[in-house]
Image 1: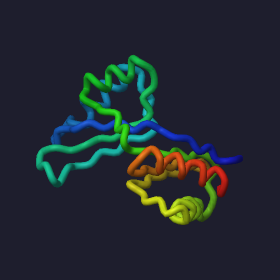
Image 2: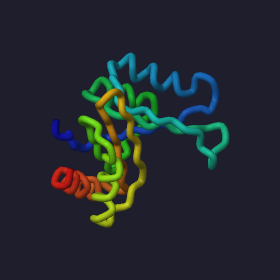
Image 3: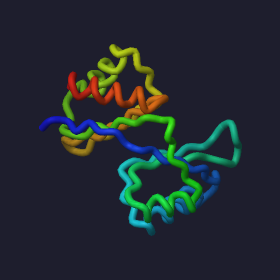
Length: 141
């Protein structure tokens, strides 16, 4: 099966670095019907006591309104490419080599395989870079 290579919107919110800090944000999104494919949370070393969570996707007005009420922000300046399909040996290497050949710098890279299926999210500093990466990957993978 061919890989699906699409762009994704990334949302982020500050969280309290304490028990339940992440759960409170995710509970609110869940109550609005969000079925998240990607959640990444980490402490903020530059701001002790705080952390940040990144999520995608949020679909529809109800989920986006809930996100805004929970102080999530759509990271409009960041471009994200989502790659999904059958996994194969060296796929991450092929993806990163194709991106590097276009002189595009990665902001972030996260991937996971379950069984034979893979989902990879690649973040860039701009939507323009993500668009270029998406076109490149569609041609080269």
